[in-house]
Image 1 (cartoon, rainbow, N blue to C red):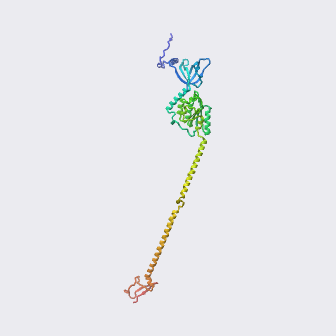
Image 2: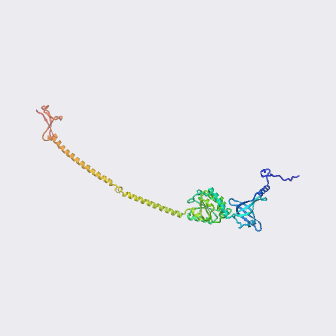
Image 3: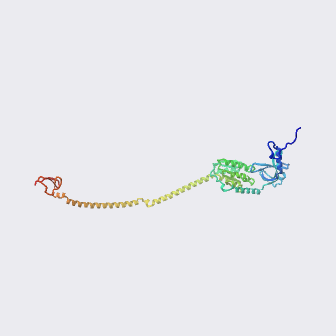
Length: 413
């Protein structure tokens, strides 16, 4: 006899083992029971797709979290949508009172909504203000975080809509100022469910490129709901983590998404962004010309002042007649030389006169003068003067010195 008893499964999930597992149907049933006991809750999201078929009481909409790529199928009765003041459209932000449901046959999770409320502008502004205070407290808006833009970027990364007017405004205005500027353009969705993820991914890709020196996120004007992706917390934190200087050029002058506060520079419009990311070549050339003119004028002024100073120095007596002092000394030296010459001549004349007088006296006293008067001097052969006849004998030979010569003499007696 074959046994038809139903196998016993573990009572709780914690009691399951590899030998005693739960079948999928039991897991689905238990999840359904758990979700049935869970209370209803309010959720917020963005309507991605709304399906409403004529003659059917149930409508289906896809509710997506704009911060992440996650969505749920929501079932709502047609009368709930009919009670709204304005019909829902794709991209609208709503809050819905839902209860989670699990379909056992497919094992899929969905939400059933009994109330749907569009998020009004006032509520959106209040939430944005709360997010603004939160990010400001974290320091994401601090001025010291702002990085200066490079004077002349090698390449500019541009995040904008596909073939958009914002792209044209940025590129044309930048190339009008600096024709050689290079752009790396990342076309993305700038509104709608995919805007946040695509813009954040494009910014991250450009930030990883070492050739990109500045990033521009540009979009034309739009309503508050259209510009909500640029106040999204996920995108703002991605921009705050960016190492490359980033310029926010969203909407018009009166549009102020939170991206303007996180970015390193806020441009009032995409046109303004094109003018601020690169210098104006004509303006730079004019600046160079003006600087050259100022430098030339300064150099001419400096040369004129130095020339005047040199003329003033040359006009001073010491430089105008540099030999004047020497002339004075030369004159003094000439006078001294003349006086010395006169003194020397006078001394020589006196010395000559004295010498003449001495010569006269010497001549007068000289034996030669006596000899010249006819006297003679007797001398022995050895030159001794004979002063007395004593000691002389006959035959002694002597020498007689005359004025004009000498004579040999002999003593006879």
